[in-house]
Image 1 (cartoon, helix red, strand yellow):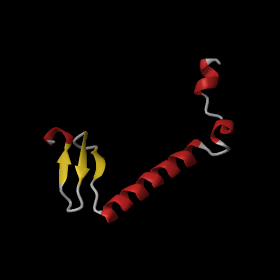
Image 2 (cartoon, helix red, strand yellow):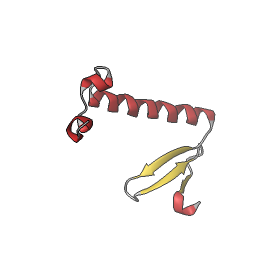
Image 3 (cartoon, helix red, strand yellow):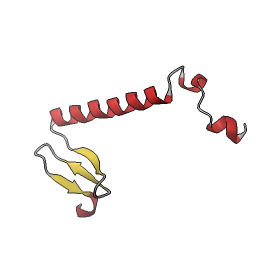
Length: 69
């Protein structure tokens, strides 16, 4: 298989779903999973793009960044 064919994302490989639709579905699945975690009182892993650092947000709103842990 050549690199051209391997890197090309044809609809045959995604069951007729476009890259945009797959990205949308993935983001929505993550959002729903995070909402479920909040409802269960579990912490949610997130990323702060301003600080360029991952953190965990607890149900009480407290944020703990990776370097603090």
